[in-house]
Image 1: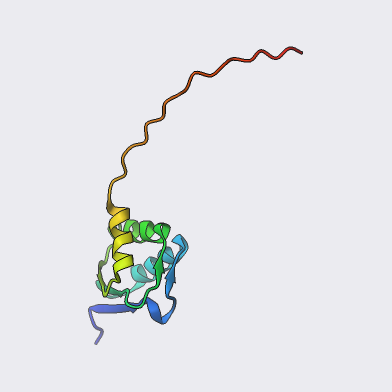
Image 2: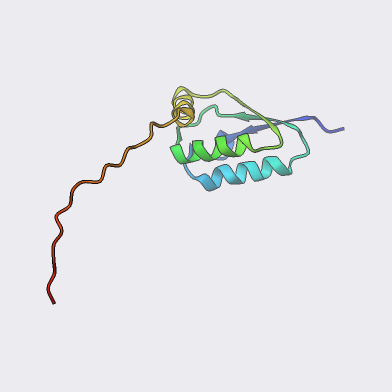
Length: 104
């Protein structure tokens, strides 16, 4: 008999979550899992990069599994919040450039 839940604890493998490819490896494993509910434990994580957080959230959104985070350190929670916050569009204003004629 298999459990319908799976627990993943990052700190058993790594304490720094920095690469998009690591988020992809995690979700590739999650998608292959027979369990439908996945619990991801972030306890003891020392650092999470913005790129990892973006990839993690994008893959979670598109996952066929129910992924729930637990034991999220304050810095990790801040990074998730930062990534979820919509960015203000950057307005590009072209400046007047002086046209320089180059003679051959």
